[in-house]
Image (cartoon, rainbow, N blue to C red; front, side, top):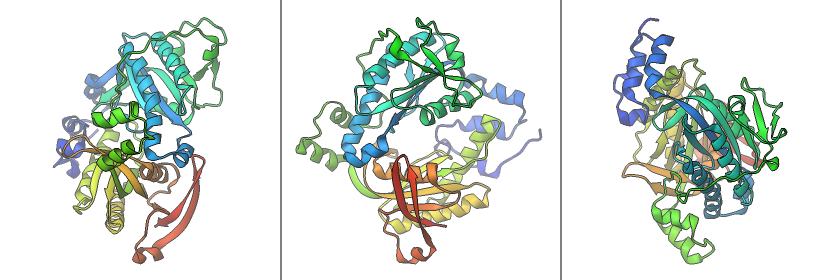
Length: 406
């Protein structure tokens, strides 16, 4: 294939590209982009082993019944358990566990049998909690870049855990099943409803004797400072003094913009990552209003906050136009209210709260391409109202409604 020089790559820096290695993207984008070169460039990042992904069940409904602090504490509990059982046998956490999902990786020296036994033990303990999780486990090949797992097999097991498991369920892939030694013939049942290229099996662990062991360390990778993590794990949140202190240190009222860029599916991972880096460069160049704070942006998903909704709408509209000009498309979700901000460094923050969850559902689950969704919490400036149309959509057993700017 012929070389291509992309103008948007000319002024990249590590800051713009996030955790994706810039030199890797440049070598790919400006070199001979063949499958052989793709394999060669990714070989140093290729790892083999077992990945475990989890996703919580019933959080949308729980969020309507509990305060944000209570939800964060309830969500933290299963994450602590998964991490403690996983770390005990040498697993390592992938990414920052700020949301309600988790991911861990176990190298090829750790047997899939041990991984399953530990996760079944974790699941039995989690089943006594208010927040239940679904677990997906797969043995295969992954690309480890910037602290995240990439590639078709990583996408596969994340998709299974997030979209096709229920609370309390554990499912394993065929490659992992073939490495197991189970004592009971009915311990596994084929999930015939899942039409993946790789067959998936439900583990009927009611028939198994499980004796996993936990590590004493429950500190999963989180963005919280030690005081806040102590609040979540030990403090009685019903104490008004505790709640008041947490709110004083972390709580803000603001508007959240979350957008999902809908990239075309690429056959080769480095083409996909190149698209992300280019899109992220465009996002940063559009961010000119100093009143808008970037929480995160990786070229596929972005989260920004601003107290002035007018500024946030204008940023969304300018970014939408710029992305469309460069053959990208995105869906935008906005919601306002209380969020917690956690400083990781002077320039990096993490965020949690109902507005983030709602904006995410609007942008990622129900939104139409190139539309800007604003739920009922957003006070839309009068000059934008004539351009809006009402919407009402179900998402995760709750009804979301507001106005769509097209």
